[in-house]
Length: 235
Image 1 (cartoon, rainbow, N blue to C red):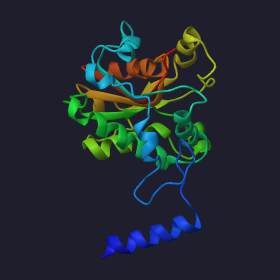
Image 2 (image 1 turned 90 degrees about the vertical axis):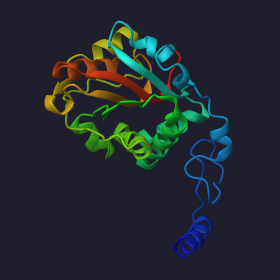
Image 3 (image 1 turned 180 degrees about the vertical axis):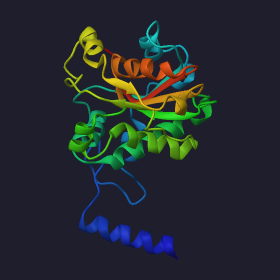
């Protein structure tokens, strides 16, 4: 009875204030959430989880951070329809998009072994100022969705971001590396010591942010890494 009542109210609310797909902007059906079925079908998936130890994203970290597995949900291209949910998540006060896409990404790779023996999920931290501006950390919202599917706990206390020099968006590869150097500090080494950590972010381009954060976490000792993001930028 409760679900039937909820469905009726959902239909009424959809009539008053129609929910729109975060990708194409078309009206969602009662059963659709955040992104319509057509857009989900046409997501430019990476399928990195099928070769999680040897794929283009994993290679971004070779020689910089020892990772065991790497995967991203889709290829990210600024200005594309699939970039719209990320923009809404980061700049339009839509934390629900992060959690929903995190669930969707985790569900697609769940049977691949990507999450095998991972102990904790570490979302990339924001500075206190950036988090206050946004109202939330988008990477933490993505991590919530992944955690709901996998049951892996989230840890947000082990590492802190102390500085935000400038956005990585318009920077070249070497500039991205310099931009995040010295921006993280280890707060609780015991929380991650000897653990296999899944580093989570919204977009991976150069991998500079994850690498810088991972190097600080490695100071705890015996730490292993895998990485996951929603989007992956080809170049």
